[in-house]
Image (cartoon, helix red, strand yellow):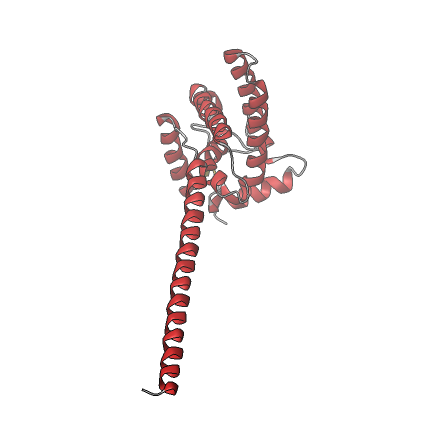
Length: 215
């Protein structure tokens, strides 16, 4: 083998070594990216898990929701505006809880009450109505422009908000609630549900439904 052949062989071997090194480096980089993606997904999963709120719906309220759904399908709606309204119910709940527990969590209670008002007023027209109820909703908004939804609707629709709340909270982008906040929120929501159950016959329409015409 002459010197030129030896030189070419050396060059080829060097090129092979460089290619193998580049391939190994690319493999390491790809594994690193994959691991970062896995960590990112894991963190996201952890956030989703931590953001879950489990609502304990009492049997009486669960049964009512089934009847409510059947009534809507039969075009039997609750008469509006309701008495007591959502605002009345939440205000009375605050007094009831304060008498039961004292003022030790009044600050948390106030924040939750403000939050329930806010989400009910904001979400009623987009998340809490059956399709058949939308005409009635439109009529109420035109007739009572000066009132919030929480001053028109009552316990029947407030109950729907509590059922929708877990999904609602998890759908909020760019906001991660701490476990402590979630625990406080869960405690108050479940306590509010117990309040609705305790005063069930006073708060819910059980017989005086309004027959809705076909539109």
